[in-house]
Amino acid sequence: MRILSAFLWASLLAGIAHPDATAADSASNRGRTGHAEDSAARIRVDVNMTLVPITVMDGWGRNVIGLHRGNFRVFDGAEQRPIAAFARLDAPISVGLIYDSSGSMRSKFGIARQAPVQLFEKLNPEDEAFLVTVSDRSVLRNDFTSDFGAILNRLLFIAPSGTTSLLDGVHLALQRIRHAHNPRRALIIVSDGGDNHSRFSRREMSRMASESEAQIFSICLYQSPQSDEEIEGPELLDKLVKVSGGINFMIDDPAELPGAFTQIGVALHNQYLIGYYPPEDARAGTYRKVKVQLVVPVGTPHLDIFARSGYFVPGR
Image (cartoon, rainbow, N blue to C red; front, side):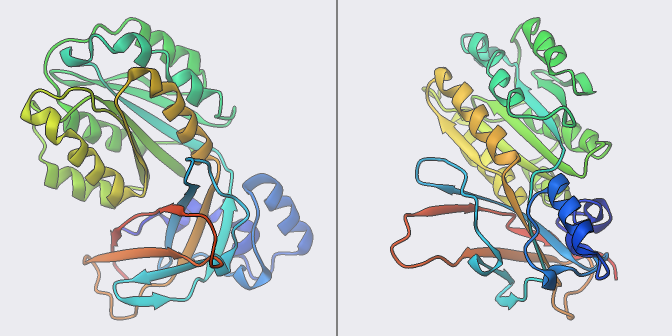
């Protein structure tokens, strides 16, 4: 599977994807999906194109907009590849919340259950979300909905207890996000530590995350870790985040949760999309490393770039 399904993204890239698109069509599509760069990017999106969503932030955690095709370089393995398509998208998105509701979250859950308000304020009516909680087992508490108040109500009646089956929750959410109504997809994990009760392994979830069309974001409450699982929690979350191109927010105070949700909400609607063709000798089923670099003038303040670290080559 590619980084993202070209078929799913084709409608979003209509303004840059079809060689016969008129100026009026392009203007209309920009109004729906964000800024499409130049006419040279108007190529047909096909099943062989690799599509990479990218988030860029400055040193203060603010999203950077206004970059263009020439500000990016993409490498497939060690080889730089030409950028065949480029866009900045603000299109409908489907979001899955994965909430740690184990016993260790008991003292923090009062703030945690209200924090998604900040995320939902940044989402649009066309967006949708669902809720999974994890303790002794993972449970789908609320399926896809644009009534975000329903998810807040579900969280209101969650009583944290038990162990942490975090990887099982990620598995459930990755399965559910496949049925999203929007091609843009993301998962957000909220947890204070690692995993101590899952059936699935880290290796299995890392593979599944790298094959998924969803970016994974995490908010890790790293506050006085006690067990080995809690100490290793950030590493576990960081691995899932990096392979999927999301961002790991490390916080040590539950009061910082709303701010982290705000940053994620802004990031979800301020992303770039790069499309390129893998090398001809890339064998189907193999894992390819991807690296995206920024090209900015000397003296530009430090910028952070977040993109997937690799993908599995689809069958040709």
